[in-house]
Image 1 (spheres, helix red, strand yellow):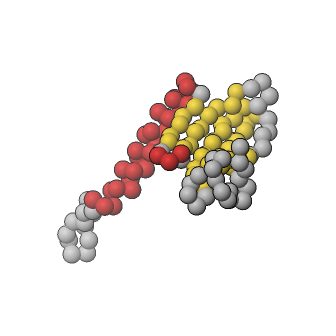
Image 2 (image 1 turned 120 degrees about the horizontal axis):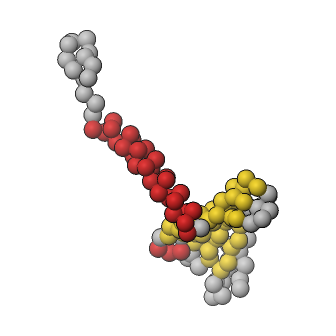
Image 3 (image 1 turned 90 degrees about the vertical axis):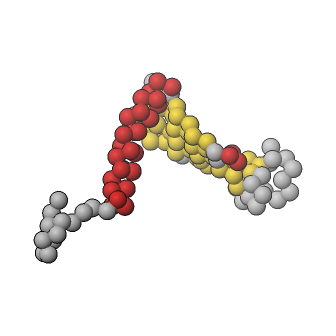
Length: 116
């Protein structure tokens, strides 16, 4: 520890260590997530109400990369689901897309949403 001008030691507060611990935890879990992605081909996180994130591998003869699919509720009463898919390609090209679909009983779907 270092000393200040009064000769007293300066201590690092516990709150100052918190960001370091969070960054360390995130970096520690990245290899675990990577191994899971390689072995299963996808990693998925989901929450209540239809919100979910899915990361998946694209392994085709002319396209390789990672896709990220996000689904979240949309509309005033959350009766629609919006799904967006983004691709990060290292071989080939792919277009990102956004889709929205509502339940049949939805009276007034938001812009961009379709009824089945």
